[in-house]
Image 1 (cartoon, rainbow, N blue to C red):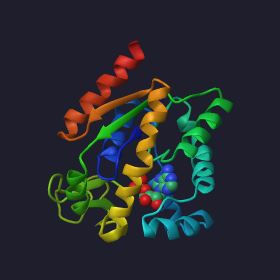
Image 2: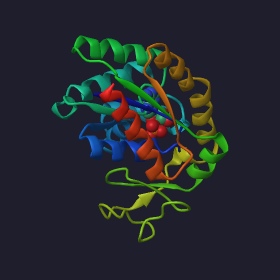
Image 3: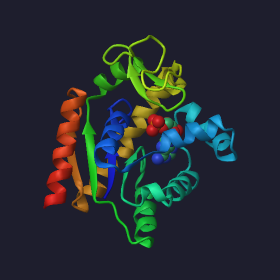
Image 4: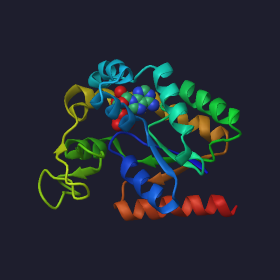
Length: 218
Ligand code: AMP
C-alpha cells in the first residue's frame, strides 16, 4: 500500500510518518531527509539541491522526481511506502503516478494533516532535529530527555536554517499557494482524506491508522 502524507512544515508529518512506518512495516520515504543526506555526503545532487533548500525554495522537479523514483525502486519499498514531503507540485504528482503505473503500482491514499498557520509557526520556532537520523523534537512540546541530545541515537540536535527567518515564511507560502493544490488532485481521484493535525501526537496517529484500516477493509 502506498500512502502520501500531505502537510505543511511543522504539521507533524515526519513524526507521524515514522510512527506509521513502524506500525505498518512500510518504508518511510522523506524527500527532505534524502536531500539533507545528499548534502551531508556532498554528492552532486546534494550540491545542486542545497542552493534551493537554503533559500526555502523548491528543488526543481527533474532532480526531485528522479531521486524519489530511484528510491522507490529499492527492495524495502516493495510492500508499500509512506511518502513524506513528496509530491509537492501537481507536476510531481503526475510524474509519480506515471512512474508507479510503469511498475504496476499506484498511490492508494493521500492523507492531509491539517494544522492552522499560526500553530505551524509556533511549532517550527521550537523544532530541533537530530544529526544522525533526523528524529524530530520540539523544545516546547516534545523536548529530549537530555537537552541537545537525541533520545534515540545520542546524536546532537540542531535547528534547521530553513526553519527560521524568511526561509520559513517562504516555505509556508509555497505550501499554502502551491502544494495545497494537491488536495484537489487527489480528491478528484477519490483518494484524499483530511485528518486534524492540531491534536496530541498519539491522537493524530490513532486517527491516521483508523483511516488506513477503514480503507484496507473497504
Ligand atoms: P522538508 O524537510 O520536507 O521541509 O524539505 C526541505 C527542503 O527540501 C524543502 O524546503 C525544499 O527545498 C526541498 N524539498 C523537499 N521535498 C521537495 C519536493 N518534493 N520538491 C521540491 N523540493 C523539495
